Length: 208
Image (cartoon, rainbow, N blue to C red):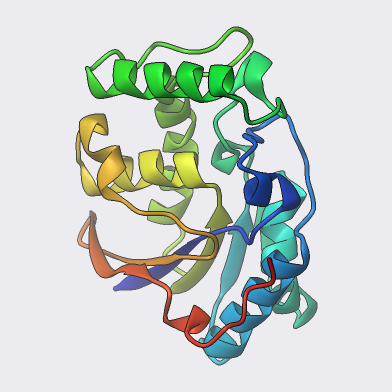
């Protein structure tokens, strides 16, 4: 069985402020995010990873930087990038923005997965581009243990894709910063081995 460790990136300052980043904002981890990344590294540094995959956005590779610094092979896959939120990326967290996002999330929940903000992507768009990273995971048998760092909304969509679930179930996957989903791949099928694990964050003092 191939073991795939899928984690969300650590916290950024925009995460802390409740501001949507999306694919178009390439922000750094903040102090909390770096502490989360360090906690994840300390917990999982002895796992014999064969390969690291991240998105093209630096908050993902900053999260797994210590694994990269240890000399592990690393590849960026643009398919793992966060959903593009278009005109709302980086906008202040206001009642108007919250209303717009609530409306969009409800539209998706109602089954219109092609809906998107101006200049942005739909969850269906993300689902389609995530098929390339899925193919990578399925066709490299020499990579027995893989670490993959990506983004919250894209991760929810990716888990639906891997597990053969409808996009209506993407809200069933919690995704706090650096949360881990361990996935097995065997006989052509993906399965959940560890769901929404944050044990590496136990006892971590998060700065406010």
